[in-house]
Length: 302
Image 1 (cartoon, rainbow, N blue to C red):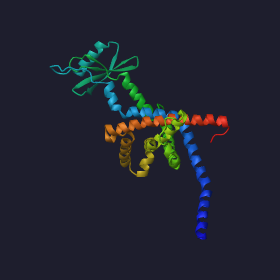
Image 2 (tube, helix red, strand yellow; image 1 turned 45 degrees about the horizontal axis):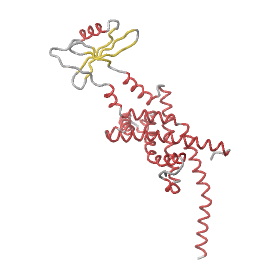
Image 3 (tube, rainbow, N blue to C red; image 1 turned 90 degrees about the horizontal axis):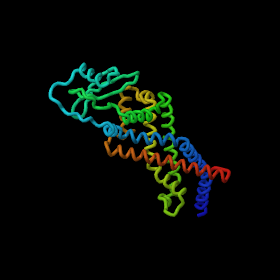
Image 4 (cartoon, helix red, strand yellow; image 1 turned 180 degrees about the vertical axis):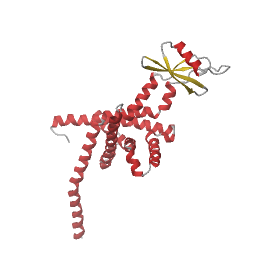
């Protein structure tokens, strides 16, 4: 009996010795998570919101650029020379630089590029009458193209892609550290999983952040890892030893990154998760600011 009690006492003593080490590791990971989130808030907000728009890019393109109303006419279509003459009659000061066929849902129309003083304009023309049908690339589509380019390279070429690579690594570390912090404190927060109506707003923000975070961590890890593979595809191809296999893997990663593999359902889930990621960035920044304000009053930040 005495031996059992001694063994139990030694086991508890070992736990007391290990407890400060575990507490220090948890605090270190928590501070890493806190400061990574604070530093990357603006980046995460932009990349999440722009990603939500790009998920439904094709639907937005069709919404902002509906097919022009084209009535079918009897007779033969106009030749390229006739279409060019019709464009010159409509825009006498412009120079025709190209004529292409653009297929709509019901028929094909002519897309003519015109240049005036170095400015290119793209117009649609009726293939039978030569009538001007409108802008081939309205401002809304141009804005979507800029948004996609900003999402992929921040409008800065290779420098923007490098920033995206760093951002993907930060997002992965942020998600992993958040999962560790949440899991290490799960027992103490079971009773606070949902915010009560009588708690103050600051505590409610913290509880909502901790309640939402675990469900978004897996998306953050997935987006971070796949995003890093897009930024550094040569590393993926080198690891697999074949460029063909690397291209196929990148296509699969793109479908996973964008949620395009499962149609409307997965894309909607991905978009909602992106908005939830923006919510986490905002609430995390509020918690960080609250900690900074508290450290100013107490003289130390914990």
